[in-house]
Length: 404
Image (cartoon, rainbow, N blue to C red; front, side):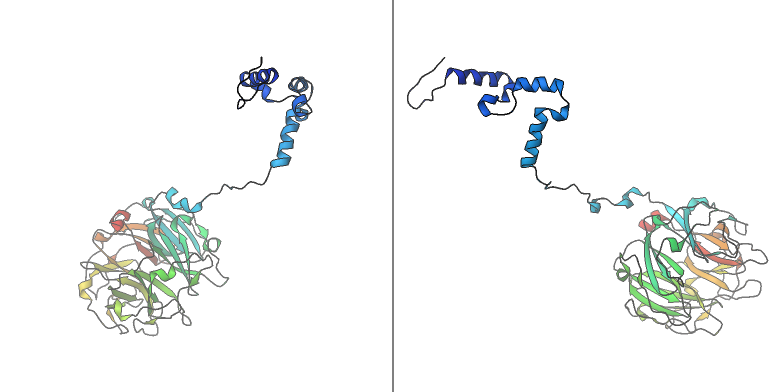
């Protein structure tokens, strides 16, 4: 068949029309013949060879290989994971936990509800199994999503998330802090402080020798895994406490011999990380600082002694003084009560966890501890063995109330 039109119309021959029809109605003819394009195979050859030869030797495979060698180039796109869009913290359940640190540097976290509330004066239950001559030196409650700042005896600070502390059982001894932080051989952790956020608030810090330092929290927001300088310590001094402040708080310092002082935070100027600090209280030769606390309205100052005694005294009984003074008596120490191990500002609804040198823990209600004057010794809050003494205590924190 041959069709002819005017000069502008192409002339289509019978052979071309027949071939075009076969291509349109049968896709296998898209593989063109040897006579037309001088390829080294025909469609018939292809069907026969695919039955006789292996797949790798078929004409189609050779043809595709030729295309790859001619046109292939390196991949121009990459598939990557944007870790900024994935926050592992979102995968961690937020819960209240108790963190304990021992004198030999072992740390662990356990759910706070592991320790059930008991009556005042009870024996408690074993809180962890420690090595011989090891005992707990710090205990506190926090949220798994909080930052933990580890302050060392060398004046450095390290940062971890609370969920990065391995969870242990009530009787486990925990893991060595040196396995979590890059500590030097002579370095040990003397204080661990939970931090919710690095905002515009401040830290007020106190050392064993009665020195205090005020610094913006933001100056400790670092991603350095090797730690940073927190403060320059004088000889034979160490950090004993760090507190959040809003810039307008009043500070309470309490000593081992039962003295205390209350002064305005603003009496301590804002300092840099490398500063040492200024005198907070004047100490006698045999005395040292055991606690720092912030004043709250309608609250009491709780003090706990080595012999297992404690008391609450209204903060209104402590008048404001100038920073650096000798302070006033806050506890009447005796041979039976021993000297103070710590202090904290508490309210009626609070609860406490106490621990002695034998690693026995008890949880009690603050309401069970009597409210008495500054010159008294208080009541028995925990029975301790003849060779034991209280070494630490912590106030239980209600996460829901803190967030509100």
